[in-house]
Every structure is written in C-alpha cells, then in structure tokens.
Length: 75
Image (cartoon, rainbow, N blue to C red; front, side):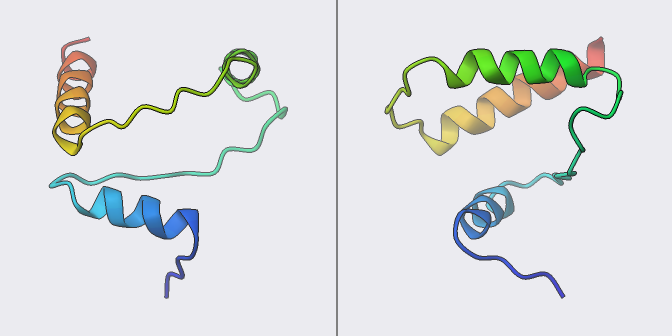
C-alpha cells in the first residue's frame, strides 16, 4: 500500500495526470555514487538563487518532458 500526503500527494497527482511512467528513486547523498558530488554542487548553486514564482502550464511541462525524452533517446 502506498501512502501519499502533503507535497508527495501533489507530486503523485501531477505525475498521474501524464500518460507516462515515472519512477522516483531515493538516492543517498555523500556515498561515493557516481555523479552525486556534481548533483550536490548544482543543488547548492540552485538553492542559493532567488526562487522564481512563475506558473508553468501543464502543456508546457508535457512539451519539455517530451523534448527531453526525445533528446535522451537520441543520445
């Protein structure tokens, strides 16, 4: 049984609205997993910038996901 609440419920509902399968996986930080150091660095960079409070339409998100999926497939 999966329990959803708060932000995870919002994320679950958003992902469920797409006609795609999404896997979210917890990755432990600082455990010598390839790419974690770079991800940590980029996360710290992003968190130090001001938050942008701009709404993004569902259609825009779908298009971005579609484009990124196509690029990943081709590369």
